[in-house]
Image (cartoon, rainbow, N blue to C red):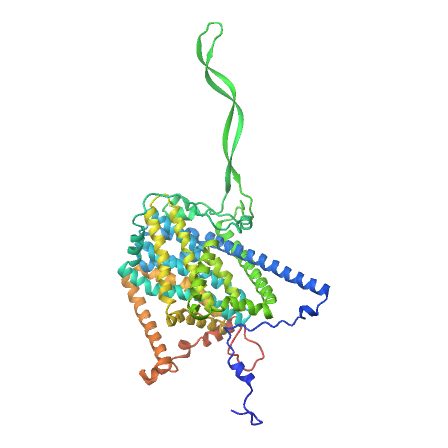
Length: 575
């Protein structure tokens, strides 16, 4: 199409059409060049940079602390229920129920490290068998990514930042779900993880008393001023010790001290009569040092408040979310102010570029090693990947680079299970075997979804689809969070408990329908001529089955997000 003057459209129109929202626009630095500044202006610029760096470090520290507080809040709200669920034999013996239980328990305690450590301890204590524990470990892998999704909500005001942040958060979900969908049936049929781990650990015997407390060395000074929990209570409930159900997770005492008190006590001793020289047993009074074990009272914000665990959990949840959002906003704003012009180009080129020449194929694997190493150091995959999520949102890290870092983090988080196994006082062999199962499950997923290029694109394309959908309908992010981590696992868990026949009768047709829809979608995009004329598109289906637009209009009306006075409804809403 030509313009009114007969000329072809300008390149500017083509550039607008080629705009890729997954590539963050370059931040232009409009400030004067360094050479144009006088001494006072240069000093002020350096001061602003130092101040921003201090704010970034402080915000990052408080952000990590808020994740710890968020985890504690979920433990207070659902930790005991999670422990009781793990103690139910009828649940853990069903692999599908065990998988969903692993998802729900990890979501409730907000830490795959905690849920994995509990499972490893239960296996070491012979309460769980290794075969029954494998699906729970797989579910824990899925549940741990809920933190990333929650963190991405902080960038929802900016549509494109939210698109990238939500895609960066859900690429972890997509990889974990795809790995479970493929590997769980294989494990149920062949038990390959069990036999492989058994072969590697069959010579491990005896017990161990290794120390596994390697994390939170930096954050604990701050978080201990707010809340301190006795995490052994959840573990003891999972081990079947019912007396711990009535105990509060909030610590009532923080250690103990030995107090030596001199007391005048009556002591029976041999007394010799000097006149007669005879010795008799008599009661005499002496000053004796008596040792008393006194519990030290705790001194933190929620110590001895008299409030119940759920009430403290709700308060702590709201507090942690506020801290998390404020820190993320400050972190993003300061990073955007610093990463302008030449600096941004250098950082992006360093992080997102591949190695030169034939070594480029090794780039992703090197970043996997980096992700695994950092996760081993901080002992938390949630902290590492949640820190990367806002960086993906502002465009410092691309989604393609986030993917291998996430896979490496999956490998690094398995060290927590190994350390928990080494800390088992009994059953070291079984505890180490399930920890090795966790490691090889993640390695199997990487071998399945990364080395082959077109397989590597599956989680990335699914994550981009999630990000694009969320950018158009922002309420979709909340719906995804609720359904993916609560409604669907809870429903499948309930059907599994009703029996295999009920699960197959209800879930079988739904699964077959979803597979058929997926196959038809692939054929529509690649070989539409193979399909009948009617199935070459979904236009014949009701709009509420093929589009989120009707639901968006409904929610827009419910939450009063529609703009008054606009004649034409906009295709995208801010609801």
